[in-house]
Amino acid sequence: MKPIRIGLLGCGTVGGGVVKLLRRHAAMLSARLGTRLELAGVADRSLTPDRALGLTSDLITRDAAALVARPDIDVVVELFGGIEPARSLILKAFETGKDVVTANKALLSQHGDRIFKAAARRGRFIGLEASVGGGVPIIRTLREALVGDRQRAVYGIVNGTCNYILSTMAESGADFADVLAHAQRSGLAEADPTLDIDGHDAAHKLSLLVTLAFGVLLKPNQVHTEGISRITLQDIAYAREFGFTVKLLAIAKNEDGTIEARVHPTMVPSRHPLASVSGAYNAIYIQGEALGSTMYLGLGAGEMPTATAVVADIVEIARMRLAGATEASDHALGYPYSALKAARIKPMERVACQYYLRFMAEDKPGVLGRIASVLGRYRISIASMIQQERAPQVPVVMRTHEAREHDLMVALTEIRRRKFVTAAPVFIRIEEQL
Image (cartoon, rainbow, N blue to C red):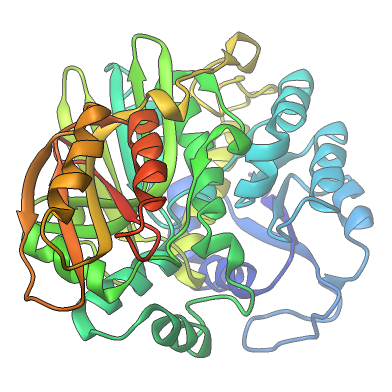
């Protein structure tokens, strides 16, 4: 059989990993497919010949558009990232009869409407396994393995940088700034880590997971998003006393067609499997109606984990082509794209959960009672408290029973105005029944 010829756009960390896997496992992949996967060209402005990678000068080009347009290319692998030129190149690939593999979660979550419609119109396949969870095969799992079940909720640790920072703070006692600086020096965090630590990367991924799990379309700007920069060692220590671990969770719940979608620091029970996920690992915990709860764990970023997911998509497309399919099915997200409707979102103020609260207050008689009185007026009851030693100012630390977000925000605003409170109240949401 004639080989399946690949045009690679971008040969950075992940692209280099793809090249290595295609070279290293060439014989195995040929045995699985019955034909060769052939790297036909690599577009990268800064790339130079590399004998170790097998990248000769005739393979390398700076003209990505010309590589995409070549008639001998079967599959375009887009690893540039960002919005442009990635979007234009992917659309050009579909127009010229190519299938596409991409790890570009920002592009797919923000501009997926155009991308998926173009793929369907041209009858082309788009592989996106590497866009969520790195090497964790969660997209294929939701699209295929769990297709017979109705999914009720998804909880994801889907940003390795944030998980590394929070788990290192808990284990080492180092503060946020120091751990972030170390992560940047070791390459686990970007020089500008905003997209990660502010939760936006996780929101991009959650929007794709919501479509796969619940069959509705969700934009990242519809996801309530908070980052981890306000988490302190003090709060991590109090969480441990209450029996919880702090994680940045991407949470989606389907309540009779209304979708709850949020990304924020969350306290989860320390006995729960998600609490033990440390370092740069990702984990996605899914609650199904029939199957119950399952969890999928693995490295969520990096050269080889992400490259493994990319190559898996290349192989899937190759099998489809070798089987003689002239058009791909319109099910990259598990549903015909034309059948997907916009999600009906539950407003954040209507979300109900338990809360961890910490107030810095004057150590005077009646202060606790006045805080409890305001909370009670807004239907927020205290489940437990941590008592502190006497001092001029003391932290008042408590855990609440379930309360509505709107009620808590109004209560905290009122408490902050009281003179006996000396700093803005701290709150972290708790997910105990997951």
